[in-house]
Structures are given as C-alpha cells and as structure tokens.
Image (cartoon, rainbow, N blue to C red; front, side):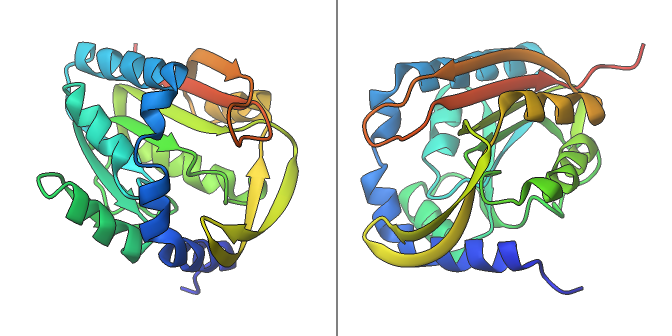
Length: 217
C-alpha cells in the first residue's frame, strides 16, 4: 500500500528536528499548569477505570510518556519518526517506545485503557481524521479514556522553519466542536473540555478534549 504524503512529510520533518525539539521542549510541562492538570485528571480517570496500558501516540521524544508514568500510568510511546523514537529511548531507557502510525496501529482490538494524542493529530489533513479516530475506537477498551491536545482554529498553516531547521510541513488548526463531532461519530462520549489562551510563543488558543468509550449496557 502506498504511504500517504502527509505521513512521509511529517516523518521527514520530525526526523530533521528531533534532537533540538527534544531539548527545546524538555521542561515545557513544568511551565504549563493547565496542561499538567489535564494530564493528571486523565491519569486519575485511567487508574480509576482499572489501569492498564496507555499509548502516547505521536510521543515525540517521550516527555509526555514519562510524565504519565510519573503519575502511576502504565504508559508507552508510539511515533512515526525513527529519530524521535531514538531520542526517546535514549532519554528514558526504562520506558517502551515503538515506531508506528496512528492510521494503522500495531495493537490488538481493545488493547488500551487510555490514549493520549498530545498535539499529534495536527499534521493530519482534516478529511483524514476519521481514519485515525476509527483506530482509536478499535484499540481502546470500553470504559477507556482518550485525551487530545491541539491548536484552535480552522486553517492550514505551512511550516518552513521549525526548531532551528528548514522543514516543509503542514499543520492544521482545528475547531473543538469539530473534534467533538468526531467523538460522537465514533462512539466516544465527551468527558471534559479546556480551551486556554496562548502562552509564550503560541499564536492561537490551545484545546484539550477528553472523551470516554462507553461500556456496553
């Protein structure tokens, strides 16, 4: 099967910036209490649902994966970029990191109690998001939780520079209501929503949406 162009360009861009990206964002969560609050709430809900594996999809250099583990969650990371996975394994040798794509996860049905996609749906063309949400629905167990983070808007931005490197990569700003519609379409129930104003170098508000996959009645 021919790989989608957006996957190739995303992999190439993040392979290019991996080392500098990891260093620049190394302490980012320390400076963002609302981000930590959403991750902390997610971790508590997952533990309350009985625990179990949690996949940090689009994990990059692994900082969110490691943070989730510090919150008592059995988290592991998956990323499209081999260079990002190499950095993550080097920084967190005790954690599991695998190469893979959100469009076709190498996971069994209902294998996960939780999914975090922390700014990792932003390079997927909006018309292709249903493919990713279908995978989320397939691998998440009933009663499990899904947490997404993304920039708010309704536009495509072409990035030519990133983390000190020349790149060529599209990023999509998304409307929270549009993502909530996808939750409903694929059987998720929205559990919480936070939209905060931009901080530091951010140019747009940031959205955090959490959903639950219901158990059969």
